[in-house]
Length: 151
Length: 151
Image 1 (spheres, each protein chain N blue to C red):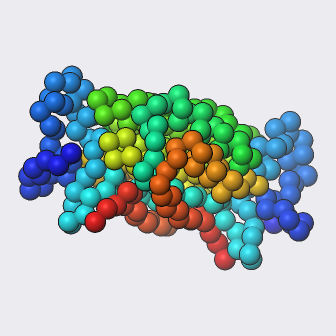
Image 2 (image 1 turned 180 degrees about the vertical axis):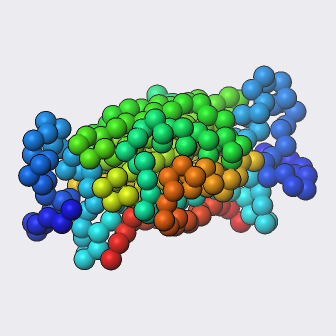
């Protein structure tokens, strides 16, 4: 699994055997990334929005999350959003070639819990502006986990 | 939004208006929970499995996650699992009435990153035995976030 890593690259170089596949881009992004002398599976951003708007609109939420995922460089494979009654909350997820984005909203509290988990060369932080624009939160609370980190 | 909370209850009592709905069980579980003098949206368990098996089998992974979700008391609304080539990794998610369960696997490293996010009366820790039985990991690394916590 070891491979040369060029400056600025965060994912493994494809091995010779992998260059045979027609699905090369996905294959490259599937492997552990290396940065700052450690290796890990992916970056998982935990995003909590407070004082946010339009949290009861599944179509809007779907569009905002897709915009954020694409801005982060991700490839969207599947999306599903569920609208709860009677409070209007939405639970939804985008399954990505590079992991997932999920959201759960509590419109009665103007609160949303979002996860952006991305491996490979994606940068989950680049999804944040779309979330801010789409939901206009008063406050954004962030935490980062590097998942599967090994020294 | 304030309501009486009886001992042992973790979700809000339904308000009078909410008792009109036929979807009461979901409605009850959608609201912030109260425990230890704080209120929060839900418990988010971050679960990393190392030395795990059968991480390249989407049907098995689907079944294990469903078993875990049900053991935790959750209601499954939707499931989607994607099988990557050529490394055999799986990305998948269950959307629940009480948030979500997600998984991403790196079979070449015997590693899986799992999230169990559950609001309401569900107990995400009760999903862990199904994960241990299904994937036989050498090591399970856990972290808990209370999402949306307010004092």
